[in-house]
Amino acid sequence: MQDRDERLRTLADIFLIILEQKYEQEEQKEYVRKVRTLMDAPECAELLSCSLVNAMGYPTPIAENTIDKAVDCLIHFHEDNIENKKDLNKTQKITEKGAVNNFMNECRIALKRFIASRNLLIR
Image: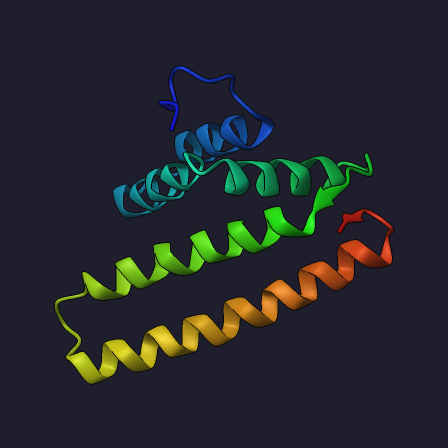
């Protein structure tokens, strides 16, 4: 995987850099830094970049496979964060991970439907 500093910056990278600079609380800045680590996964970077470009009014297609990989990456990211929570017992961690999985899989379906409804989903 290419180091973040060695690859070209995407629109998503720039958005997160600006967001991190705007936050004043260290906890908020740390969260943005964690999200920026997701950008090391090409599918996450592509999904966020396409989302930003589409939000600006420029229709940009994206592959269904890219969405799946990006959502799987996000699930793993949240599972790692849950696993690192010291205030939760094993049962609570399992419950929270299940909730994250259910929510993210619902988001996956909704995202694919939304993108497909605009004829931008590449199968």
